[in-house]
Amino acid sequence: MLRSLCLVALCCLPASLARPASTENPYGGSTWGGNNPWGANYGGGPRGGNNGNESDRQAWQRAQFVKEAFELAWDGYYKYAFPNDELLPVNNSFSNSRNGWGASAVDAFTTALVMENATIVNEILDFIPTINFAVSYKDELVSLFETTIRYLGGMLSGYDLLKGPLANLAEKLPTMISLLMLRQPDNVDKLLAQAQTLADILSYAFESPTGIPSNNLRFNNRSTDGATDNGLATIGTLVLEWTHLSDLTGNATYAQLAQRGESYLLNPNPASSEPWPGLLGTNVNITTGLFEDAAGGWSGGDDSYYEYLLKMFVYDSSRFADYRDQ
Image (cartoon, rainbow, N blue to C red; front, side):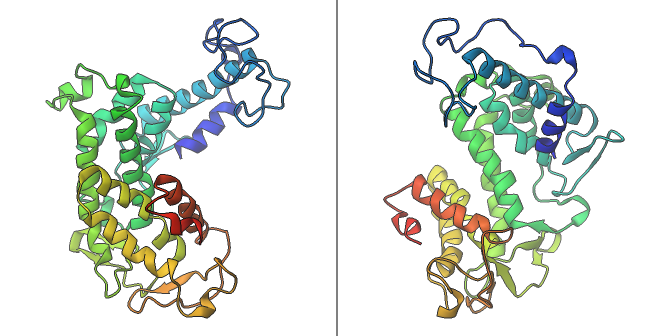
């Protein structure tokens, strides 16, 4: 929702925002002199992302407009919907389609980090440790897939950035929220702790004869929706986050859970479920590990499995060389 709001905001910026926030170009370059991080002959292309006729000044201005659109969208969400999942901008109310854990905030976390907006970063950083992942909004079903890519991935990405190149963005003094909650401002470490807590809660999804997880979970009684199969994407879009959690915590269990389910995709059976080398069917029986069809492709329900093959190879090409060859 927040990403959609950014697009809406960008299309509706008032004329006052259609000007650069500053007349100084922090990137330097041929327009104003100085060192250009895109190269002395920058004129667009893959790194600049423009048509080749855009000056450094124009590229910098365009970046400012994107940042302003994000901030406008965040301000609306924070005022009217936080800490719920989404803002409903027509009537300034909110909804909770992702279990009421503040999906827009966690989704926005790494965007705010990359944009180096310390205010928004610390608002979200203060909020994440307060989430109670054990309770789903109105006891609604929890998607293992969605929760992994949004919440678990969002927290781990934020942790990596704040422990690495963007460590300076974490406030050294308590913000207003942390003061009200009577908490200490050591929330970067709490990101990893929350990620581990969430994974521990989700982990019963993998308790099947094959280790292939169920996707739809009921936290209130540790049950599932009773589905007998799971999909290619919803099985195969877990392994990066769960493996990285193991690498960060030293607890190999998380990686083992996700990789066991993934193994049925890397070695599909029956042979007819792979009608073209590397192209698989969609539905896999949770009990037997056998594909139930040979119908697939690159659309929703299948696509991110193929995406994660490449990501795992990039993540660690020595451990996951076989992912590249799928």
